[in-house]
Image (cartoon, rainbow over all chains, first blue to last red; front, side):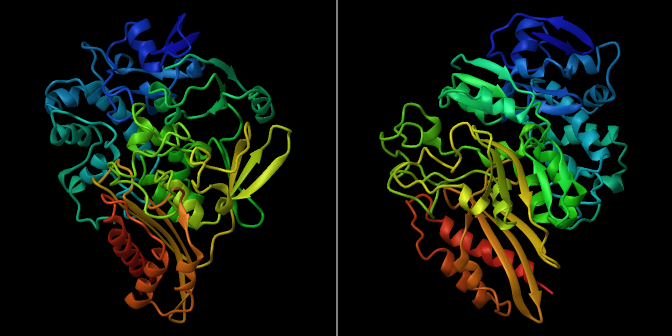
Length: 176
Length: 327
């Protein structure tokens, strides 16, 4: 099988059953993406495939041979952090850190979705759904943090989204 | 996970040709199928990968309706401006389901074919007529809080898990398929699902190897209000205990059109003409809404833990109807 991950081409011999997550972790040494539940419930394995966030544990590697795959390692490195990585550090958006790579990859995908104008379950108006704290929480609900660092995760994402305090906590009608 | 052979199809015709034996399964988003394969609830011998078929477009038809390719991801369908403007209940239902990551992967066709989340269906150590016909139903006398109160049989009380399919029923969608012999078929969503009866493992009228290619929505009902209300154990990323999709118009103070479909209550996205008959022609009132709920639950049966769903769904229906008919 052949893959493009973080801009690098790889040829890999792997069992047909290999998930995209196991491909990265077990075959390519990219252990940033984490295996939490392995059932698509926790989000720790989130990667970006063709720019969209997905659960890499719930997809077969063989189905992604012609895709552009980005893992946490491709977003930034210790000497050159992605803005979201830096914001998670400065806002203490984690405790144990296990969910963090998935949180950050998910946040990158989520911010892009918001930029495209995609609404969410809590958007009162589906055609005009600016980000605020409530929107961020809803849109990030596929990423579980066992340490419950959620308030700081929202702070980090809100900072990178460039939200003011007023934008973060607007008076809103809560959708049913 | 049991091993399997794999073939990637480039056209729908090739996909149905590649699906050439018992034990062949199509895979698109795979978010439900792979989960079930990991647990060996599903053990296909061959996967036919349809994720690259050119079926990811949403097109407007001359009759005012929409044709949705079976591979349109749930997130794209929810965010499509034509869907939001003309079929808001569908966007709302999609956004109420799963997570951002899953909606990016899950397909329109696959969502219709989701399997139940009944605990016993997932537990290989428990008898389950849906997973292994003839072994019995563990849910009936077990933990059945999340399971069905309508349309059940003595063999199965599983619920259908989809939010999207509930909206599709309220919108009178049509499922378009390609059969193994090359024939196309159009199936009303109202005829698409089967009640469990004594064959709960057979959930739809699809024939072996039949591929969903599109879902069609008829032209939207003029002037209708759309609501999707979902009640669940947590505020996000959970399956429905009860959900209601409603498309209603009020003219001259009376309900002129009502389409109501329900999730979390039955083995299929539920719709019942008697509910709508109780509403059309009536002035909106709690008495009329209560009569609609009476009609919905005339044959309902709880199994202990899930008895609460009947009053919960009654109140959810009444609240949804108030919202749909408020001035």
